[in-house]
Image (cartoon, rainbow, N blue to C red; front, side):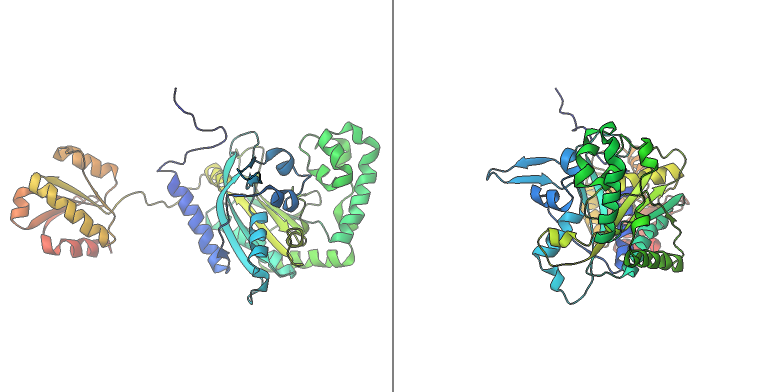
Length: 423
């Protein structure tokens, strides 16, 4: 009986993994331009981190976390998202005391959620995220949104829509919370069990319910924008003004609700409008979380960030027909004929690799024609052919696989000649 891959996971094979590498490197380069530094956190953390940081009323904590006890009886969880781990590290390593504020970080790595697998959604998925901690300036909100959009546009996506909303400060949210309770309470028995449980704990989460999204009360629910106080309204208007100054197109959607409990003020999502992308169009989500650092045991520190699934990004690229400029070929393939030539090819291969020339040789003792076929499969730019007779004459034959031109080169000049041609 063969062992099957776990449901909701995938193998990323050569030919596809290069696309992942290109996407990740593009995102990292843009983060460097915006002066965000990489952080790497553990794949598993204390379960309490996510219960407190993500929120015990969220689907992530209630239904989707992979939790287990270690041999010491401690409750641990595979990380379902990256923000809580980054903030835990920010607090634990006292980064709030760093002279350079705000602290601007990015991360990339696998996350885990036990949810129903579907197109573009996995139980293990790779998330790329950004966090900026230590500033209440609405300009940093605009910067974070601009960075997210820049990553998608740099990769060639065009069918994008940025949607933003304000969840307000604590006062605004409390006023909106009471309005939501009063709105839903008379008919809450018509909603699912999750919504009934959330009515008093976090009624804003009712607006994010997938089961009851078509209920008539959803369409008439009071908007958070009606309950923003002057400070929150001014903050949101500045974020919008900065985005316009940056020529970042956006739409305001008062129904936008992020799924995590720690968000306030700016919330946003980036969606794909590509035809055939699927019913779930969200590519990226994020927002401001001014209370999260304190919840995890640190000093009062504002923060904002976003995260996106690389699987979803690749699916959007495919939906738009965007091809990534992946170089799948190699520089040189060495064809050797004869025992002495084969022995010499081992040394020559090592030499050219040390010079940074991507290269390969035959390891299956194939005939000349089969070795050339292997060179074609490798998409080699050049093929070097050496036999025992050529070795005695201190020369090697080099063929340009694009033009078909061939030339004989002295062995001692071979490496420099190939380097010159490649440059």
